[in-house]
Amino acid sequence: MSYHLFFEFSAGLDSSLKVPKGTLSDILNHVSHIESVLGYKSERYKDDPPRWENKTPKDGVTDDTFCIEAEQHNRWVESLYRRFGEWSEKPVVDGEEITPEDAMKFWHALTMIDVPLERWTADYYRSRMEALYEVMRGHEMEGISFDEKPLTPKQAGAVIRLFETYLDAHDQRLDVPKGCDHLATSQDEGYEYCDKCGLVTREHFRDCKRRGCPVKKEYKAMGWDMPC
Image 1 (spheres, rainbow, N blue to C red):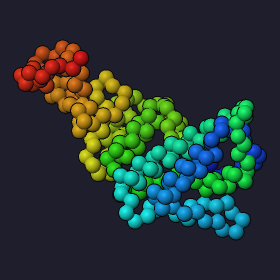
Image 2 (cartoon, helix red, strand yellow):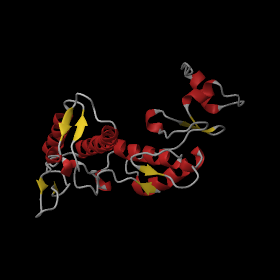
Image 3 (spheres, rainbow, N blue to C red):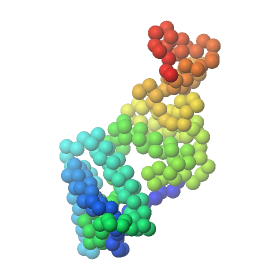
Image 4 (cartoon, rainbow, N blue to C red):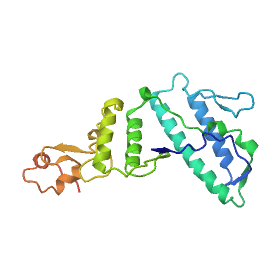
């Protein structure tokens, strides 16, 4: 595995950056929102760059809010990193300027927020596993890339099933349905188990050619329309 660290070891801007108008305001608003909702505060030791003194949410922040805000913030950091790279190579004409002094107002917030495992919600767990699945399939996700030959959908799904023993506190039972290349869960009808067909999506049964397919037979007996 390789990990991209984005802004983690940077101290700020070396020179001014020409960006679209309103960018600085949007950045400061985002930082203000995160600090208000999660209760984060910045601190500075001597000449070191400012940083969040800790990333433990204030009392009263629910697991759901923590996970949602952390995930949205982390995606924002990734996006801003890539946009800064684009603007440094091609400054925005008729834009506004972010100076190194401006950057010091928000640089402490350009760090990832880690959510402790005990606070993971079902949606957050699924999101993390979906990202890791994509990584194992050979796609960079969240700054993580796979250094080996990509796994097949079946192999990647098997690794996710190994993780669930230790991480799946919400009984998601994520897996890869037959013929698919994504994770799904039976909790939202993402797949069903058939004694003859194995793990499949509902759409599978419409075209199932197996004689006596029990799930297809069950659907018809209940008078349900087959998926189209």
